[in-house]
Amino acid sequence: MRIALDTNRYVDFMKNDLATSALIRRASEIYMPLIVLAELRAGFAYGSKAKENEQRLVRFLNSARVQVLCPDEGTTFVYAQLYAQLKKQGTPIPSNDLWVAALVVQHDLILCARDKHFDFLPQIPRA
Image (cartoon, rainbow, N blue to C red):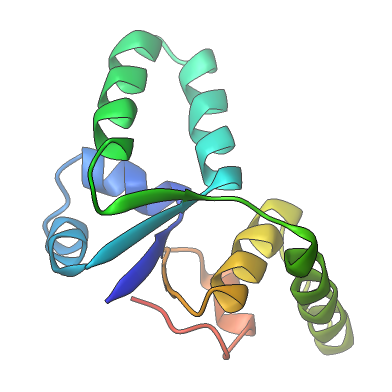
């Protein structure tokens, strides 16, 4: 199973959420979208445990099963399609999550996220 981790599920994993931990253990490949990495580090910069959180993140990223997933020009086409779909449906989602969704679709991944607004994109498999 190849998954993309959203910010809230990474946080759940760090808090030892049993369901999230089990899912991550089962995954053969774990992708962290660059956007998620930025959101996490922004949260660390604002929080009181920045150094500790950064160290835990680096350990996670150094796992052989984890890769940072960066947008490229191809991602912009998927982003545009998803944007148009959501606009027509009248169900916009936050732009950072739209980038995450575009990467998930582009790379044929399963999205591990708690946000209900991803339900507006039924083509994205969820875990």
